[in-house]
Image (cartoon, rainbow, N blue to C red):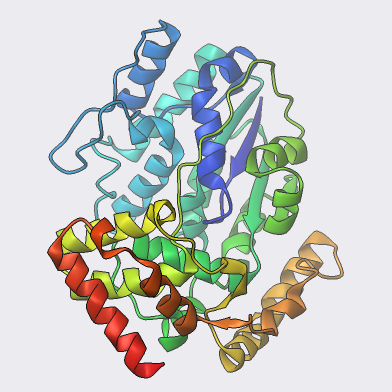
Length: 381
């Protein structure tokens, strides 16, 4: 049996790949590729699909997550994120995030996967979790635990990395999307990230390499993933897994904030009560119904001096990646990291604010908030 482990990174198409694996779980299983569940909810949902229940039941509603009607359970869609979050929670005496509820202990989750492999006898097991990118720096023993789920299998590793300036913007937007109260990228957030897995890619990769000696290692540049057709196409093409016929496409499940709206979301998280901040974020995530923002690819989030500082800090990390993968430059366009984009963020934000139809906002509190921000930007123009 073979095991292929996708262990990261964030914001490089992992949700699309998980969506594909989940939507085609039964078809792939019949073709010898197992995307295993980890607990009772995920395996019960799998059984309902095997019995061809129509319509399929949605995830169990709870007072915490309030899952929408018809939504498959998150524990079934992203089972290995559930496992990774539970491993981190147990190590840190914490709890998994609320969208992964009712998880048993790690030992039970591991046994659930082992029993599926034992009775279903797949040719290949696919484990897919960007959350596992967090294991290396502080919890490398967790990598051992992942390896030892199927210790006799032929194991291989797959990871996708994005040029750090592009990645940091995407990750920062993700944090704001989930309501985190953060500083602006140009006001300290970028410097904070340089000390984490979100910039130090060596701290993500090296512990996995050390603990899987001799295992096939696929470290992919996100630009190449996009050029190959996307995360699904690249994962299966790179790892050599054959796809059966009749598969469903993945769904876009992780919408991002436009760069021009990121500062609006950031301020909302800081300045508004939680409910109104959530309403503001939802409005911004769906704003294309009302607004055409300036293009992301033209909006500068760092500034020239910060770009130069980040590029210098990334030199040894990039050298490690290039040597590991046997390339002259893992990111062939790494020099672009130092080049500011043409439109300052402040200009893009002011443009976005000017395009918001006030009558499209859901309540007076948000209208007052947007008008206040627009006055601020007009005064500093």
